[in-house]
Length: 374
Ligand SMILES: [Zn+2]
Image 1: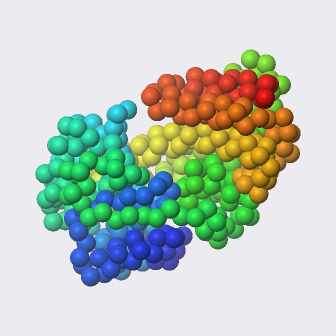
Image 2: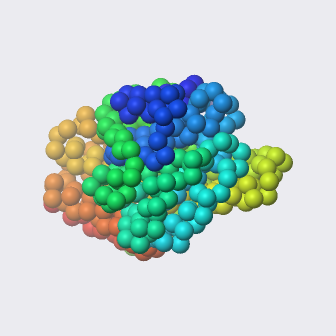
């Protein structure tokens, strides 16, 4: 990807215009709260702002600094997300505060991006208030949240709030097509597999491993109604082992970066990058598991829209034959039961049930609906 970093964002002229003006006029605040639904580009905007501050050319998009910020491997860019089931934990916030107090490693600034700021609550939130109000002068903190209402007033009031509008589905598809050269149908399926998050859909299309996982999920769903219990258990096991392949792709990609870092950076900076890569691999595996749910959900939704006679709303055009067959016998309440099974699986995984058990239970529940679709 080349070009100015702000070009990565689409459909956000208001938010990006505001941030660009702040960056070029040197009026960047010390803390921002970016609010908007998943996939609208909050995280991309936070990185663009980091590029604007850290790059000598104000965010050229192509220098080593910009490239490392975009791939989240710059030692002065720090990404945080909740480590506890219920949200951010106090020890994590203490680590964060300690880290904020240290000097930048390479750049003039350090940028902290905290995802899911709505889950910064209670003691963890209280511990952070003072730092959020007055961080050191070389620190920028960007909090990201899907819903403004979820963020504590004490947190929100210490930040400049920037709202991101939802990106229309057609615009998102057009951007994925433009960036990847994929067909409209492929872009649509990729967005469905990644919950509509544009950069994730672009990565998905570039990853043979992730496309294989999707094909395996759809293959399983097509055969599900004629599988016996042993086949279902086997299918769940093989889906979960297949999501590990894309993790290896990321590991291989990052190995080179680590080698370069070892040559040029201090030991502390290298260990920071190692830690970050480890987190990235864990996140990739978790995203892979989420993709099982997202593909399943979008395939079931396709069955539902076909049953309702709206074929233009189908997301997985390549699976249309099997979808049409299922849809022919499917009642709306049955489709909703199957979709509920996916939501339950997502919740179970969020509450630390083993993904294996959650996926098995989901497949059995969907199988029951497909066998008795009225
Ligand atoms: Zn640059």
